[in-house]
Image 1 (cartoon, helix red, strand yellow):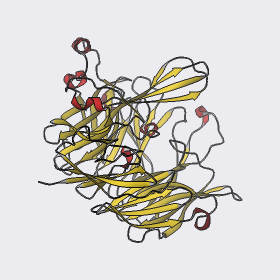
Image 2 (tube, helix red, strand yellow):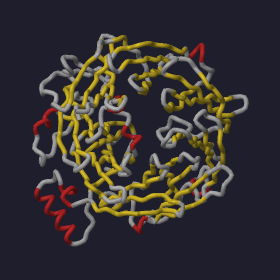
Image 3 (spheres, one colour):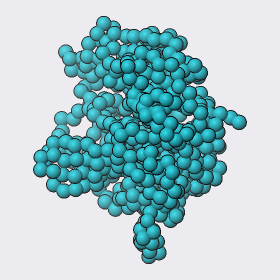
Image 4 (cartoon, helix red, strand yellow):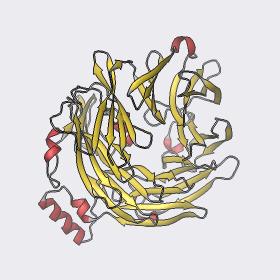
Length: 532
């Protein structure tokens, strides 16, 4: 049988085998190696290797062999001696065995932001190549999350990179500010193909930018939503390329309301897919699927979420109320469901990966508390004609608290963006696709290992250890199993720390890697083998 390997990078967490690892997995732990303390850690895989770039006082590079789980080589770049004054890291992008770093240097005398890039490779660890200046602009606004000054988007085949940036406007009022932002497209060697300034047709108070994508022909797409229609919030797609006239494509989605907007994804065939959820402002009733063709939006499909999926894991009385509402024609659905990822499969089908995520703010006299809820993951398989083949609700209940100073009025429920999930990386999930199965990995309360399929789980709190758990969903028919991997307090006899789903790295066709901290100034690698 084909085997799938998963290598996990975990920082100190302790695991003990209170429950055996499910037969679908095999675990292997490598020998410890010296820890590199760093505020930021990034991981990349190529063939049977993993590269870790750790940014602290300096840049540290570690290359690992996925087969032996050993550290092959290391390198370092001194920030103080080798990097320019004012250097600020922006983002990494990967192209095969090449890692491109984008960074910002403020030109104080000329009051200009300068965006540079440079490349590293797996073969020549720490060596810098193709360093060049990409852009000069006035003072740039921080993007979502408040850190980076640029957004970077790659085409499906990684041959085109789109950079989006925005200078500060002198107009402070949103109602009077018609945003102008810059776009630049680059080839695989980061040579500029085109650059353009785009002025919004609406004021900042009237629109919401939902996302960008770029295809392998160098066409950029910006998805907008007008705020001036409270019932439907009409969507528009702007097609942008160099000196060509900007095309605007209306998306009315059959008059249905898409509370979280849409996502776009290019496939290997160059086709742009659009997907999202429609319904009310809270309850998601169905799945919207469409394609972007030469004549605009094509092949729109609306798929209702089945009532048995909506009612799954609800108490009997709650199920009856939902059925009564549905019978009278009232909208029913899954609250606070947000689409995270569109996976375009080789056979033309799509997989939609989503999570229920929301925040409740509890006010106090001089402070307030945010309660973050990471609940069920919903997987949907979509046929090449846009019809839902199956939808699966994968139940979990993860939570964290965050307190801050300030005076607040009333309790509020807010659906947050994916970016807001990241401060506590031990929560949420990791999605993995093998040949015949989908896997959703997440940290769970140990009490949930033996619960019945229709029983709601015990909550798992951030920072409280937990058991690495996986749902296995068969690609053909959606058949689902819940599987156990290990307790963080006893991973094959080792306690590990600083677990993060963001550190679970797929490597090659059949493997993933993860790094853990073991204490005593040591890290180690875990490999998880999926026997698919």
